[in-house]
Length: 117
Image (cartoon, rainbow, N blue to C red; front, side, top):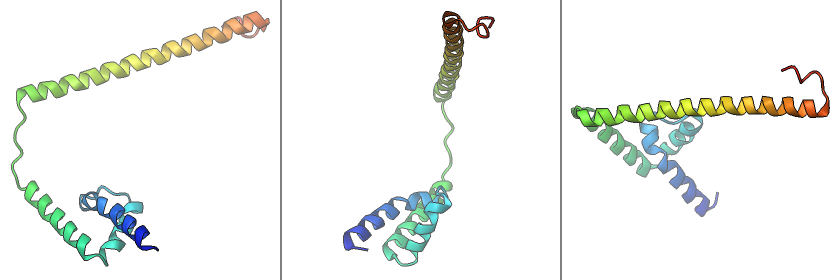
């Protein structure tokens, strides 16, 4: 591996370290990170720093969300549900239009099997 390629691979693996510490990587990604950590003191220090930071953050009290924040989150969920419902109605209209088109096309072509639908 050339020096430039090794530097690029190191940078790629270094970007995965925080996700590695938080167990957010797939087995395909965590394997190369674990292998890299066996030989890279710099990344070992970074992992240790991430772990120390994660431990410190986990010991901090979680502030309660304000009523306004909770309300905004609920509204976001409602808007999301409305979008999903709207999407499903558009999809149903699309299916209906496709069936209508096929029926009209069949009638125009004189296909008796499709005209009864």
